[in-house]
Image 1 (cartoon, one colour):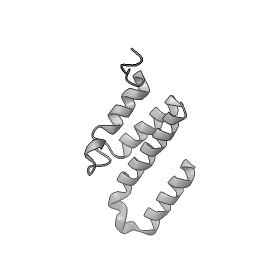
Image 2 (tube, helix red, strand yellow):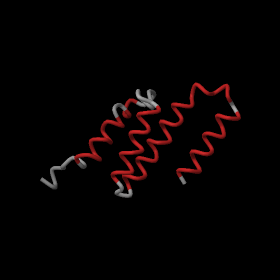
Image 3 (cartoon, one colour):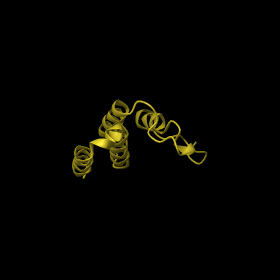
Image 4 (cartoon, one colour):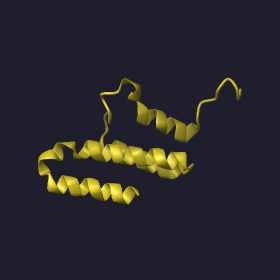
Length: 91
């Protein structure tokens, strides 16, 4: 599925070069979405790889319009590396 999404995005930017300024943002979102999917499957190494690719394409924020998305990739990296935070029920 990831390969199909990537092919669609790359095809769009080839057909519409006037939007090339949004290429890095689109690819950042693509890799971030893939990282979420891999993390949900429990594939931490693949999730971390896709997350780093998201940072490579878009080093700054991928979504500046939603206030709850601040540091979303950093939070995700912490979840991958050290696990989810403990809750009061599990401690």
